[in-house]
Length: 199
Image (cartoon, rainbow, N blue to C red; front, side):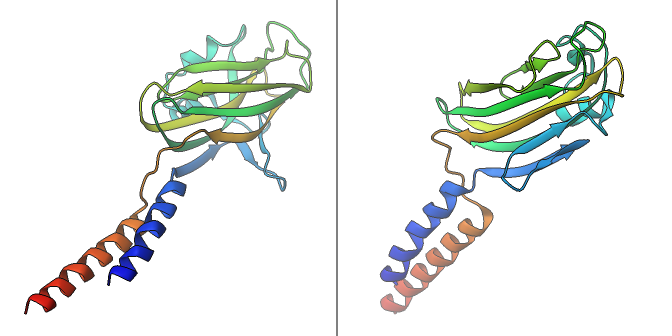
């Protein structure tokens, strides 16, 4: 029995260390390409109200990131475990069909449940500009992040954000239900084995 436990326990913690992602979701036009780049486009976007509900913030917050009025957008959302001191980060590339102006100022954003809503790029950002976003957790917990793109002023010309290398340094080890089940079976077996020896 000890041999079984010596095999199961390392397996349990190996599985637990990988079980940090608990959900993924999207709204509008957002998905992964064949080379695992996340592509988010304002084309075929959903309403500002629906994107706000999806992001879990007030819809007026989006207008604080632009000089115009946000119309429709797309976004990708995920939830991961973070430790205090660990860093959530990703690389991004931006381009827009819009000409840079105040009224039609399409933009990209990121919102963190343990942080804040932040601007990434807009029509004043030159096409194919690349950047990196990094945020360090002040506390341990579940981080829900939302990355999105909005059409502003109109829905005719669209903008796109390509995201890659999404990562969390030193991610928290959170046991999955399956790994907890393995541990439970091992413990029950150990108790039963000890009782038989006592009898």
